[in-house]
Length: 93
Image (cartoon, rainbow, N blue to C red; front, side):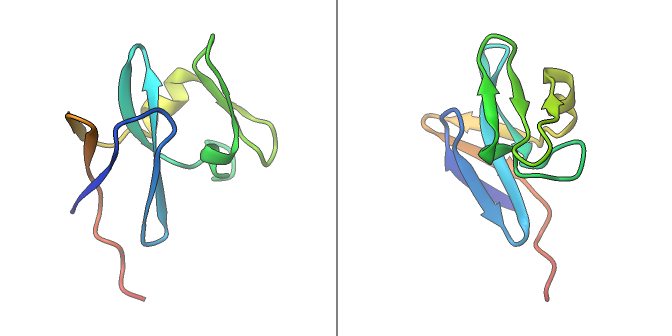
C-alpha cells in the first residue's frame, strides 16, 4: 500500500496500528518506522539531536543512532513536497 506524508523533518503518519516518521538523515529525507529499537517507544515523541542525527526515546532514554534509524527505514520516494512510502496493508481487526 502506498501512503503519502508531508516531506519535512519530523512529519508523521499512522496506518492502522503502525506509525511512520519522516526525518533528515545524511542531508536527505527518509521515512522510518516510528518505534524505538528497545521497546517500540514512539520516536516521534523523543528528542532529536541535530549534531549526531540521533533520536532519544521518550520512554527509557535509549539513544537510536543513525544506524539504528536506517534499520527502520521504509521504501520511500520524494515527489515535490510529498513523501510516498510503501507500507504493509493494515491488518483487519
